[in-house]
Image (cartoon, rainbow, N blue to C red):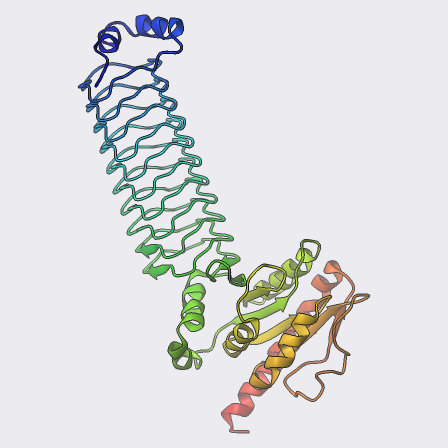
Length: 414
């Protein structure tokens, strides 16, 4: 039950209430279950106050200090919380429909199963906030800071997150139907098993997102940046692609065996890149990917340096069959050559280009793959800069030529 004395004090002038708080720093204000609807509490120091189950519909809390306050199951519909300090406040299961939270600081706040339908959170800071299973139907979050926030199983249908910072946010199993993410930065976000239906991702940044199981339908990806999207489940080898559409297709091929044989006939512009790309060798990988992108190919990267216990041989065999050609960097890891040995005879229609860095172990002799007509001569480079200068004309172009030759022979039944 609410403390009647606290209600009497806060009902008066806010400066009197704030002075009382300064003199009673150890007292936790108790407004649990109280009816404070339409009260003017703007600028009040209500840090750590308990508003659990309270009625605050239409209440003015703009600019108030509500850090670590409790609003569990409170009614805050149409309340004004603009520019309020709500650091680590608990709004779990609260009704905040139509509330004004523009410019509010909700860093680390708990909004689990909260109703934020139609709420306005323009330019709000919600870094690390937990909005699991919350309803944000038609909420306005334009320009909000939502980095590392969790929207697990949340409903963001028709919400506006344009120009929002969504770096590292968790949208796992969230619904983003008709959601506006135009010009949003969603790098490193988790969209696993999320539903993106008629979602607007125009000019959005989606680099390094996890997209395993993502459902994608009629999405606007105009001018969006989609690089290194991880299409594998947790604890599996990291496999990245540069397109959400490719991610959905490759995911289906990898995880639905019967579907593989129905779509292998589709010509793709993907190039499978395998190797062990430790942090000091990332420039090599980036140079390979950039060269492929310049040639309008979509790189599929299987990095043996990243954790994962899946069957890499089976993955390489499956992805190799749907690739234009394969680039295998054999530098400093025998596992790559062992994998290539295990799958090369399954890929007679796919050109394979083994490469390696001079001065480092390659795992096999240069002539190891000579008996396979579809394997191109071993190609060596000195360093990432040398690779970047030469790979286009000495690796990509010959591999494409070999792919064209093989397909031409196949078309004539040779």
